[in-house]
Image: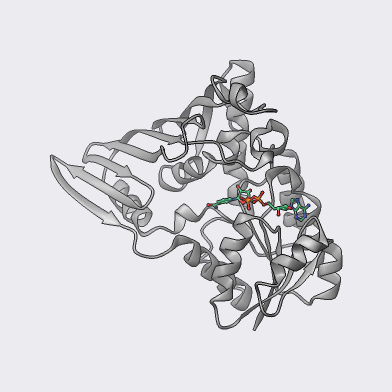
Length: 323
Ligand SMILES: NC(=O)c1ccc[n+]([C@@H]2O[C@H](COP(=O)([O-])OP(=O)(O)OC[C@H]3O[C@@H](n4cnc5c(N)ncnc54)[C@H](O)[C@@H]3O)[C@@H](O)[C@H]2O)c1
């Protein structure tokens, strides 16, 4: 039986907790939030869970095998460092932070003390993404265009640059990570961001609401990713289009559409990537074999480097090299 702690009492803690709750050999033992009251209420949904308002108190009280961290980008740091100090494996939701300061401190500590980690880049666990990787292996990729066009998440931390990092760091990071997973490493980033609409509709908006980012890859491919969060609720378009010498591969939210010399086919995901992500992490915790984890902290750091570089480029108007 694995004993699990969850940090965060918001939407995404619930997504993970509900998956964990269906597993036979897993007990959710502790749920920690910013207030004990909120955490106790949350914990009452899970039969073995106790609510805590303090992370160290939870870690001192429960003999946990692993911890899930599902908190806003600005709140990272002390929690990861405490878990590393105690040698407790953790699954942390993306993005790693609002910038690179905390992630750098965390990877530095992870070098000295190895701990199993997994980062919530769940798109990597999709069957359609595996098929896409196979198609790309058999073709020459020219370029990729992609978009994350949607509405603004309503949680208050999201609209504030200091607490979310902005749309590209917070959300479009999924696409950046997928490009690293399917295409390769990035060597240069150039970005333009703007603000068109959100600050007239909501108070305290400091994030950009439109942006476009050009990525140059080490092997010569180029990609352009655009994002906006000004669309009304219900309208969205998210995906990546790969243009190759064998045809066009279009990755949507749940499927891959392939067009080769006009012949069309589709692969639709049939398993939940969040479930696979959880199974891979828990398998690693149980057995020590982390080979099924498709994104660990060190790997996710490289994605964070790119999204943070894009912000710097948008601020300076200059291309930024990735070391
Ligand atoms: N992988 C995905 O598909 C996916 C989807 C949605 C959200 N997320 C990520 O999950 C994270 C959380 O998002 P959410 O939608 O659950 O946000 P949310 O605002 O609903 O919940 C965040 C929770 O964190 C708690 N919290 C903040 N600081 C804390 C601290 N220091 N200690 C303990 N708890 C703290 C808050 O009280 C709140 O309960 C974000 O990074 C987001 O990007 C990932």
